[in-house]
Image (tube, rainbow, N blue to C red; front, side, top):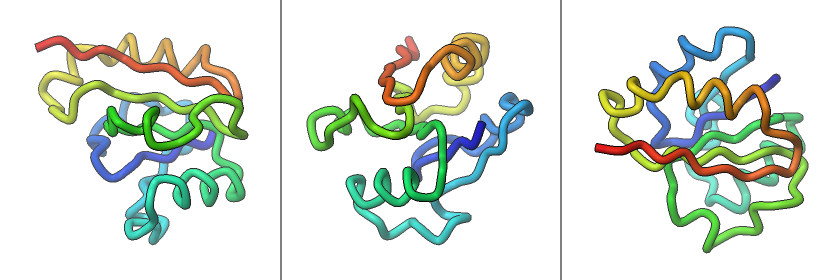
Length: 107
């Protein structure tokens, strides 16, 4: 699967998604795109999953029924996210096109 990381998504997470092609919005030159534009651009580029830490995304954009799945990590802290790699991998493995899922990252 092709996965796009949003700006706040910790890049070290890509090391744990080795069965997938992971790119960042920055690497694509899409850093300046607003969320709606970024999602539409990612869909047109054939991305399957968009991973973000933007917890307000669901209030700002239509998140279900899209041409890609959206996964929201409910933390930007890499040290905390590291403890939940298995949960993230499980969501990535099961989420389907148009799906939306938030992953709680407790303190």
